[in-house]
Image 1 (cartoon, rainbow over the protein chains, first blue to last red):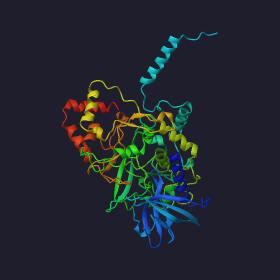
Image 2: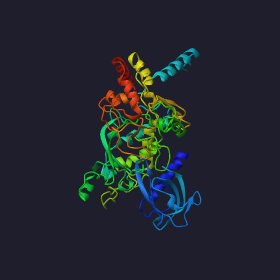
Image 3: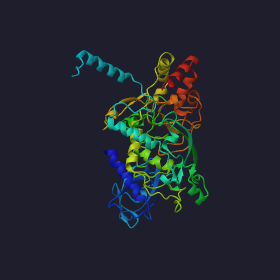
Image 4: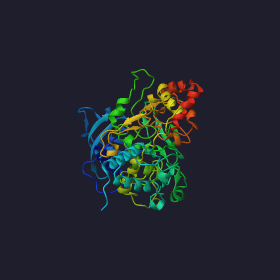
Amino acid sequence: MKRIATILLLALASTLLAQDTQRQPANPYVQGTIHAIQARSGSLDLVTGVGMALRVAHVTAPPTARLAPAGVPLSALKRGDIVRVQCHWSGKQLVADRIDTVGVR
Amino acid sequence: MRRAPSTPACLLLLLGLIASGCTKPVHPGDPISGLTREQLDRFRRGRAVFDTVFTPERGLGPLFNAAACGECHENPVSGAFGDEIEVHATAFHPDGNCDPLAAEGGPVIQQNATPALKAALGIDKEPSPKDATALAHRSSPAIFGRGLLDAVPDSDIVSYADPDDRNQDGISGRVNRFVDGRVGRFGRKAFVPALDEFNAGAFVIEMGVTNPAVPTEESIGGDSIPQGVDPTPEPEINQEALDLTNDFVRFLAPPSPLRQNGAPGRGRRLFDRIGCASCHFPTLRTGKNAVRALDRKKFFAYTDLLLHDMGPDLADICLGLATPSEFRTEPLVGVRLAKHFLHDGRADSLEQAIELHGGEGSGARDRFKALEPKDRKALLAFLKTL
């Protein structure tokens, strides 16, 4: 059951990355490895995907984005860290509401 | 009215059936035993999807390596070995990070293009990513018993790891992890966590066939596909076709080892004694599983699903946590059917494959080389029963 849920979430994340104008879920999340981060401009590129089909998800992180554990600035993140980003849509942009560190490579 | 068989006759019949069920060998391409009628039906229908040859009109491409799953996993049966060699690429950075080059089309470099893509861009394969620090060749493995490997609990794999070689046996297996942090187990670098995800990804990266789990095509070195080149609407197969394929692969049994009399029996003991079994664990056990045939089963695996350093001579690309010289222990089930060996097919014999082991495999390799010729022969004879 857990695996099915994971796959569905991955499929959801993958669908979110498709550049189409289909109906967008209200509270998507993306979990992946940081490919690039620019803390000052709040730009975050995550590698995500299904199997060997990997994609880059671009997320913008406003100054209000929370970084768990609380108090850690966005600039503490670096390429290779694994994060889970709770987002919302702003037009075609994914905007981070909360960023949790899942693991450090 | 037909007379009911007597109790002793029924008992004999039952015992006969049980005995034949216990001893009936599983041939390459057979399903695992204990499937329900419905699961067997799905296995057979899934094999049909697995062997389906896709065309551009049915979703093939625009970039692809092969036109069917069964094109690369075919010899001598669907799900077995293939002679195709793939090209993979990644970038290994000095800080130890591995970039799978997702922004440049991903780590698999497709070697074919549809006529429409050729006409649009004048390319007949995906260009190599400019940021790649290494290229790798990958042979097509047999996929027997992958459903059983899929059902091994993550916690078991983690428990086998000994990254700091605390027991000082020269073997220090590590767990690989996917981009989202989950424990990996599939692929030559143990990068992919689950079989159904591996399959869903493979439809797209190997054949350019999108599906509900991966509804977007691969980019062309990071660039979008030109308009009009891929007219088939996404997803190009539906969930049922994907599920059937998953069931075929999941239910594909590891073939029974051939009988081990004489030399192979001694070879099995030598396999343990010289240390091959330190990584090629002969058996693994599945965890709780909704499919009864996969539920808490001990099975022949000959892998620990961990990464091991195989030395600089075999090193190629990184992937996830795997450094260029780390590879997952190859499951040896069905190896008797292979024509070429190691991750890139560079070895033409089992003996050569063993001799090419380096790094953590060098101890077992050296002990193999030090064996008497008759013992080496016995060990190879054992491997040819798998």
